[in-house]
Image (cartoon, rainbow, N blue to C red):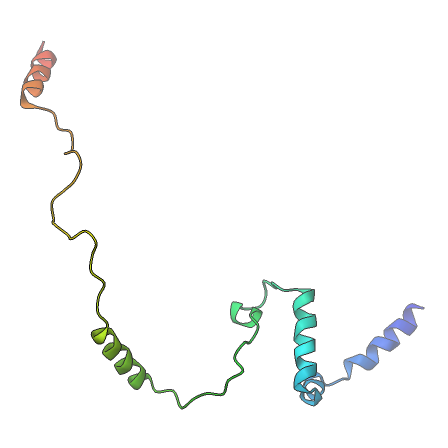
Length: 115
């Protein structure tokens, strides 16, 4: 029985997986993706970017230009009005001052040590 099982496995080694995946329709690919997620949703061996489902179905709106993106972000940041603080900054410290030994106590301590 073990020999027949090995013979069955041999025929599957010859299959080209890329060709199979290329022949699948988009609906079949989604079904396969769902089935694979159910088997192991958080495979630690996969990078995080590959563990996530691809939710982007829109086509790109245009070519990517880093310079245009940075200039747009800078322009938006300059035009955006900052939120006013509810309590304005005064610079003064609140709360107790750090505890320090008074000079009178220091002199008493130094006299006691001398004895």
